[in-house]
Image (cartoon, rainbow, N blue to C red; front, top):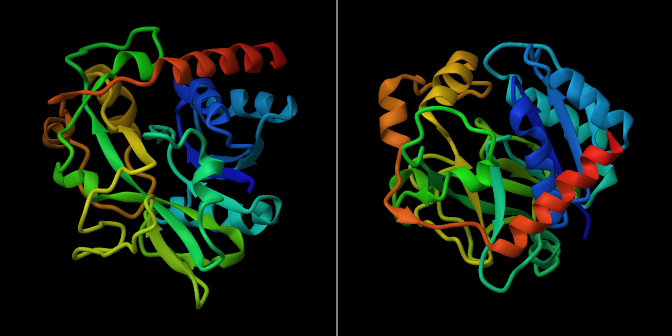
Length: 274
């Protein structure tokens, strides 16, 4: 059950190799990445990764407040036939195994053909008190998260069976599926929505979740996330209030040491290919 990732990046150069390496460690086999006019070296790095056969790179200039959805549609159209599942996630989101489930293909292969999308709830990670960026991995620097039932964790992102894909939804979190297909949580239960699609009534982290390093250090938030702005159709402003609301560090929750080691090994393998 081959799983790929479709993503759009803008000015994410310090994080790209770690993000790819981590997802290779959990058995993602293909990466289809659109670049949205990056100016920090991301474009050049992505082109080099493409030349090395590690990703498929697409140049995707700005097209307005639907940029992210437009990129997802293009990536599904051009590359969806190459994998059985496509995860539509961002560069600050890591598909994290939980419990006995160790790889993303273990998760996707556990569902019948009627399942058209698997929805992974967020686990919001805060700044851990870091004011500035340091050279360690994201997975090493940020080790504390919000409590399980923190309201923002009800957001999810989707891993879509490509044969069931009909279209994007109104936001980057959910997708419209062909008739006869269902969207389920990572434990197989049906997704019940709150007042907005892409926002589930319950936070379910069984088997897999989506670690969301949404703010990182304060410096990175201001210089990267706030300066870049949103790519999607969401409208919540990226201001000081957003940082404070998402800088949640109540629960220590570190990445499994074996998975971190595999990620570091994949980083070395990627750097060698480059």
